[in-house]
Image (cartoon, rainbow, N blue to C red; front, side):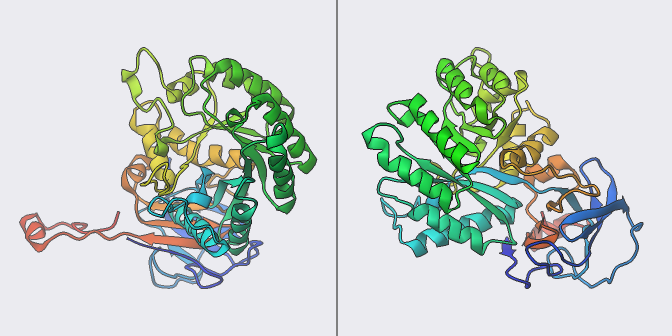
Length: 422
């Protein structure tokens, strides 16, 4: 499998500046999730028109496939065209650290390299918008955040990268450094204020300090919580009420009974992490005594997003940061249809990031993922070949080719498609 991300104006597809004022791009013969085969015309950073195949008029045709540079028109025959997913909850400052010494090296260059590589990995899978949580304060200072912000600038035009500043302590004398670092982080350019109140000796006080800093900076709040204590969760949700709907809670990995009811009435958004095993409920229908988080959220009608969490760090040494894998895990238990599972990593995840929804329809942002397959279920089961559009520009491509040994091929009836890509 070969994956590449565009750099400057050298990537696949027509060049466009980061503001999206680029030439027209025509995607032809793309299959949508509802089964329709359409052409999609993109102008700048918006979808201009969607019509039946061949109905949008000719554009200059250049030879090639979605895995090669093809100019103004790209043939997507054999591909499913979807709204691009988003990464709702990542930890890029520790990405690829599972095999590194403990503690891992944290020079500015090393941190920036790992953050950038993590963001490009997620982009290659289709996530054109991403949010990473970053430790600040203590021995870390603002080094990790500065690395994320440097990577964000380098990735401008390729992907949108958001940073959540996470101090460990905020209350009492021990939290003085965290309080100062949080305000500095938000002034420096962090997108949101976050952290884990349960790690502070005074969780309620932690939330109040965080809210004050968020109000001053006019930014959203994205907090870690297990949801293990529904009473504490209710207090947390009540304290966060003034900032609704700009509040996110996750990963909510081990909620107590009744937690989903609290979340349903709180008005906050919820993120779970199926790839980290922190989405209790993937055990599916067998859990009769203690339904898991997924079932509880569905029964309580709580809208939730799914994120990846770890990318080959100590929490998950084999984490992949693939939104389609997260959607697959949500659907695999049979509790969610593929469409709902994909929505959790696409528009629900975009809502967590405060971004507008995407549909393959005129007027919507040109944030798209083309994946090899003829159905959403098939794409979630193993769509490896992918083409990613951000702000109307093709920014990443992944090509997978499958070959069989001659002895196997010769033993099979001769058919077209006996070898191919996934």
